[in-house]
Length: 77
Image (cartoon, rainbow, N blue to C red; front, top):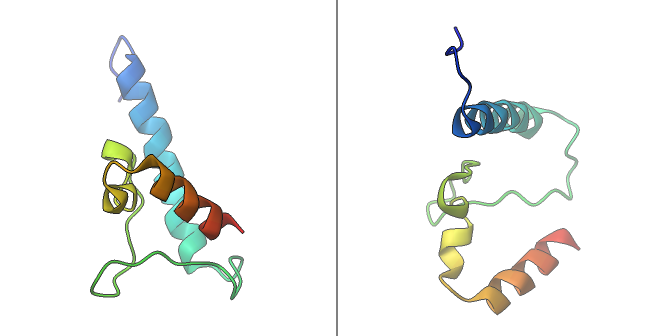
C-alpha cells in the first residue's frame, strides 16, 4: 500500500530498509568468510546496521573526523 504521492523521505526509507534486510541475510550466510570484521558493542553484541544519525558505530568516534577516517581505513584494509 503506497501513498498516492511518494515523498523523497518515504522512498529513501524504503530503499534503506531493503538494504538492511539484505545485510541481515548476508550476516548469517557463509559468504562473508572468516576474515570479515564483525563490529560489536561493549557487551559483544553485533551492532545493528542503521542509517539514522550515521549509524551506531559512527557515534563511538564522537566528532573526531580524523579518528573516524583512520578507523574506516583500518576496517577496510
